Length: 109
Image (cartoon, rainbow, N blue to C red; front, side, top):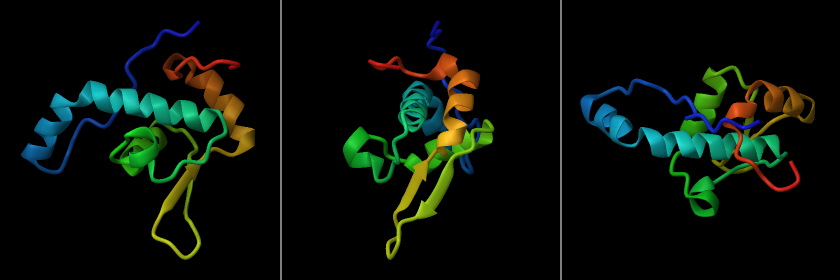
């Protein structure tokens, strides 16, 4: 059973203008966090999500996951300044079970 709860995101920013932006876009950021979590649980390795998934700040969404205790792996791709994010195969099932209420239903899962 998937309850489709709002995905928790960070609550504070480092200045008033950014906090206002966070408050105004909380639902959007929550939806993007759920999308990132679901893709990682499907075994995808994510990078440069702006073009592929319309996620402006993949690093912030990954940080939200890490702050929840999700063991997101990350590294710079060789010879670039591009970070890649993924879950180890042995962690995927644990994350799926523990955070199932936030996953977006996908065919075959």
